[in-house]
Image (cartoon, rainbow, N blue to C red; front, side, top):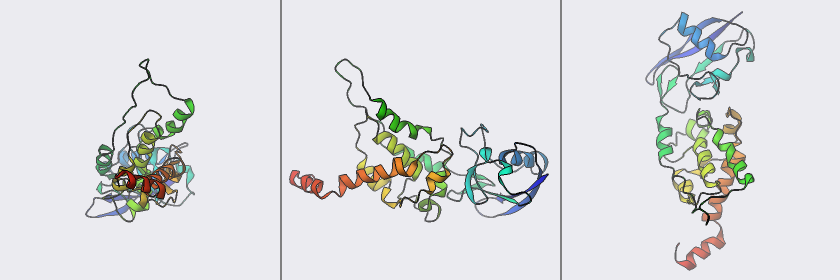
Length: 246
């Protein structure tokens, strides 16, 4: 059996989809097919990958219009005889072919206030409850594939990188804010710099996460509630006014 891959070839200035016919083997994933094209038909095809095990997050692309990890997308997932379209992530500038410039994400990460632990107990140790650890452990599963960033309409369709951090970094902020030992306040950062108000909780980021992180329900919505409590609760606003801090 064979499959036809329609792969984007080009850069940020121009490009087009080209057809490549690939022989299919049992258990083959999309990344295997791309490697076959590189080995036999287009040695200059640019594609990022590293582990081929769904752990590094490098091989992100849009497969038939949906953000996916190519190494975790099986070729037999698609109907036989229908072409499979591979395109670079739409939310980021194209460098070449399937490779995007994702450096913006790292600049967002550098601006997040770092972990600030509470002072230790009298005996010099820190104590945490297991339930508190379980709550934030989910957020540590992120492999930074940036599929959630790619599918987010605020970044993908409206290109609001100037004022919105995106779901990946709202997850990181949630991991810090909900850490039982952290004492840093990030409410203002969430509201002003991370732009959490732009998210309208469509849950599209949760749908594409290869680690099955409940981004919307467990990270973004609780952070939204914290921002509302801190900046829009009428009693808190009155209290800050009385204290002369607002």
